[in-house]
Length: 489
Length: 133
Image 1: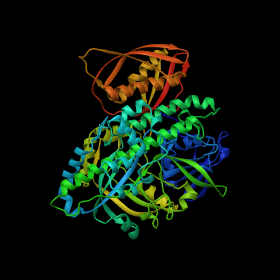
Image 2: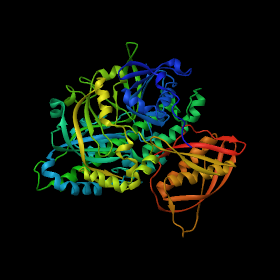
Image 3: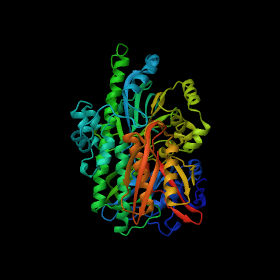
Image 4: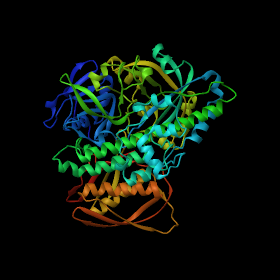
């Protein structure tokens, strides 16, 4: 049995310009706002193959939405919210929806840069990948490198990367160059269930599985020399990406509150077309409880990526000792792509306090935004767009136009094109490893079928996705990265 | 009774059916374990445990039941293959018999409510379940 094809067709979309389309509010009676589809026509034709637009229409029925629901060019079908969906809810009368943030709360990407040239390091890449694989636990149910006591976990939930700084896993620049400085200070750890804490207590410093990875890349091309210089990106030099989130703790928080909110919706008289969109008013006890738990889980994820970064730094140091004097990995930036953020956005020309839900979408604030680090004030916030395994990844900077177009948001990756089951049938994991090795990419993978699901052909063309956001002036290109080693669970 | 996998762009999904609600829940569990490629140790004795869902409708009970199985898998390395259900209005209690896990392919992160609606037709019960992977 298969899902029915998307009921929405291209003729239902009103073209606003080459890269923006609208599904008007009149499309369905229960829509509160329109849907703004940010996509080239080429990517849009792919989108019609799944139900992401129908899901976006469902999101548009939520109470308290500002302007419209936006979907990014890397959108694909999710459950509840489409992946690549952005929805800003008014604090005064809007709702918060755990499904709109995702099970992997603060799944995100961290980028670190080095002065190590690939030319001189090529013969050590396999050893580096092996070492990273050893010191960064990955795979199904992986336990972390740092077992915590209950009290320590409470501190991590409250302090995020600041816990890592106090315990020697971070430096000040790391925190400065992390979204929210690595800590959401409205976190309320007591709103995280005992079950969620049980799941997370042994997972700090672990990568997990699925589409999570650590990737060693080389900077292939620079498009904005000034921005690259500020970020510390040098052509031909190695960089490192870490993609993971809040592990079992975050998953449980989301599960707990999606379940809780089933009854909250009845209490507040909210009726929605999809129960996975379950929500509660932002100013309700239930809404505030989830906000407190979600931000605590986000802090866990910041700390998790920080600990993994520390382990990768040690790996670089060990492997390149005696070969390179400067072996340090400097933080470029760390961003979230499954998160709820309190931000101010314009509605009918007036500043409105909102909770922005980003599910498979990243923040992309432009130059001069007070929320971004001092170092990046002139160039704008780094936006990290990892491609699929074996393809390029991108470093961009946010533009101020993103605030008008997409609530200060950008794409988060390539977006899936093919179901996991189809990918497993078409691709042999072992053959994929050989194919990628032939292209100079060293793979360390815990699961061959898991690897097959993440094959490049299962994803959209990330270069096309990036071209779209750049053409829309949401972001600017800084650098293109290509992989030399991929570590996956 | 039975289950089959549904194509989904990013995650896993099942279509499950059964003559009775008990069969539906049992098959949903079997299907979910099958997606995760869970294998059990054959020679150990069966372990008994029990679970009570939070108060809610049948869909809520199903999500909570399956989530409990995922949590047991992750935390205790247990797979359950025999169930005795007791349904009362708004409530589901289940005695579960299971084994230690021998191997696991890929862990499901969560059970979603997306498109989740248990249909009761002449032939029995059916439901579509989407899992977060």
